[in-house]
Length: 156
Ligand SMILES: [Zn+2]
Image: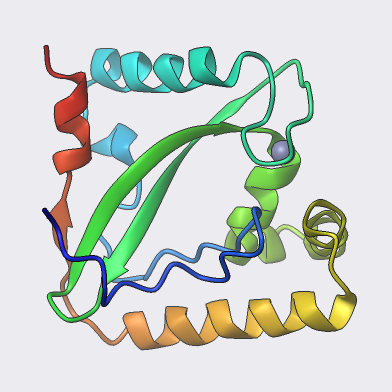
């Protein structure tokens, strides 16, 4: 059993979180590691579980997107895949706030974060500050090991 005690999960009160992947993570998305067939299998499994609703905001949407959830064990410098979820585009834009800020959709993403988490502007900014600090600290790790043991559940 993996020891999760030294892994920070962000603010557990909030269902929608800012998740900034460290720049030094070579494998920030599964589709670049897996074959198309394997990735399709995993993402469609997430879509099936979602049943047409975003797994974060619970909204019924016509199009879902697959999102890989990573955790970072900073003691062992390991990025760990912990889930693949199906989310709506609005939630996905919030999760990848770093990328979203580059496309000028920052304000909309911040509004969506506050709405889904039912929190104030100040609280949202505080969480964004924490996520950015985590990101900068994790960027100092020159090489992350990869833990994909999550994928074992798909092997029959
Ligand atoms: Zn959503």
